[in-house]
Image (cartoon, rainbow, N blue to C red; front, side, top):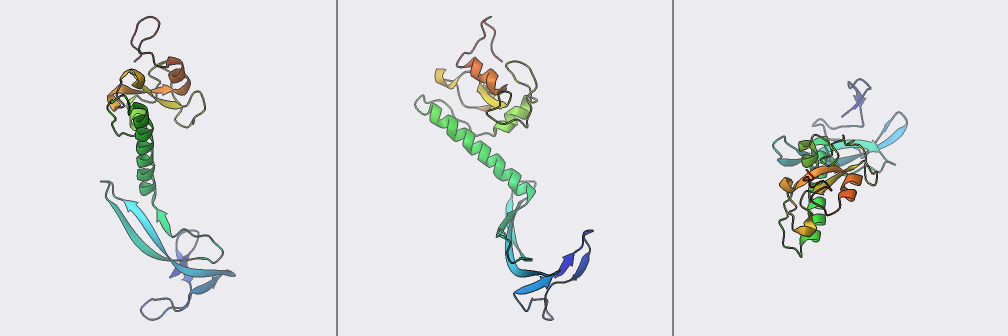
Length: 181
């Protein structure tokens, strides 16, 4: 095993190894720091969505709180999408459980992207970096509100500024009798 220099090239062996390449000791010293050998489980996902793991032997500082399992950027993005989908679905399912309405699983970000990151109530742009409780943050509006029998589905949702959504409330039309969509 070699240490990597700033430019990514190997710069020297870490520890002592037998002829087959296995390390002989559990610790090593590099630049005055004591390192120890450990195993990492790395989770990744293919572009097609197939998840897989592999194990890597690494040498890390003894004092470091090194995670045993690491996720690649693609695996982290998939996990975040699943969290958003599950969270949104569960939250809205609770609201419609007594009404018997449809509850579809979907990622709200997909609706926001479909709507081009523009509020479907006021027409203004929505900053994707703003988070609730910022009044201009993104929120999922139900065109036909859940309380009047609307479904929690892609077709019945749209992007709205959080404040625009709150001001709309459970209405389905604006004061001029125009659909709010």
